Image (cartoon, rainbow, N blue to C red; front, side, top):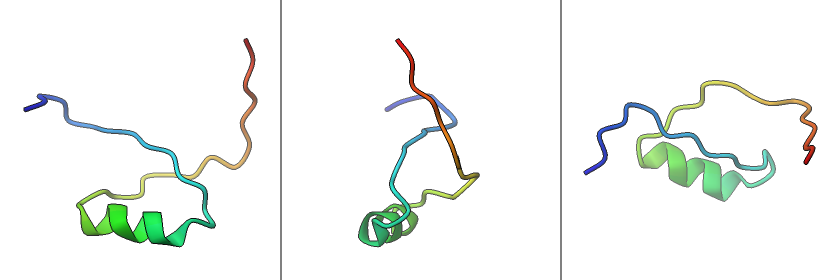
Length: 40
């Protein structure tokens, strides 16, 4: 068993089936990233 107190995952807002699945399994929404830049 993991001894962490937080797990982070990312999901697209249009993927409602995944969002509902995560909520049913105990995940809670803490925030929303509106814009993000990926760089090497």
